[in-house]
Length: 304
Image (cartoon, rainbow, N blue to C red; front, side, top):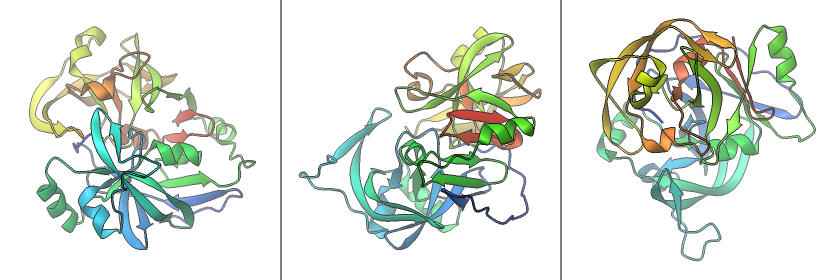
């Protein structure tokens, strides 16, 4: 969701993808912008999708959709011609076939998104830096996905009777289990505290860095120094980014090591999550650093 790179995730040696009964494992990778990417095949064409827990629905970039054989549906479509995401209206397209590795997701509707700067996006894609779309919460929850941010492996459940027993494994490996709550907006949040003040954080694998909302910084005793860096969200608005030292951040019962983190004025659609405003976004760099495992079956986040 957040278009800013601060910390490049460390490379890790390629490992053999495990085989687990009732699940299909799919490898993912990080690019130089901390995006978690999944190589996919859309209607027989190769595509690159960002795995984004902060996106309520899966999306294809409208310009690329045509190249992938995905067209907007007509007025008589049972899925409707338009859908509303983050307060914006999107055309709806239909994918006849979506695969990733050995996983077959079948067919279905998908939102079509036109980026704020389509020319820049196309140039970036030609340089191998950009993606074709987003694998969002609709697919992740449907298949009870498990995302291992450290080993760069995803598991999709294909047998409803199968169970990975993530909690049993994670606790034996000294992970901390944190409850994951689905909000009415289809976002996912976890309990947290900053300098002893309780709050919630949005778990967003589409956010490259962990970022706090500047409008609530004083409330939590945080201060951020303005920088020349800017970031933008899907609304296309460029926002100035500050950097501040965060010494006492708890996510559930997991203590985040003191470090410098980002702050900006987060868009309303990111912070207004039904049962209250969130204080910030838990992004990809902390999820990977903390060996994060996101389990949509047990609705838990595990950190170590």
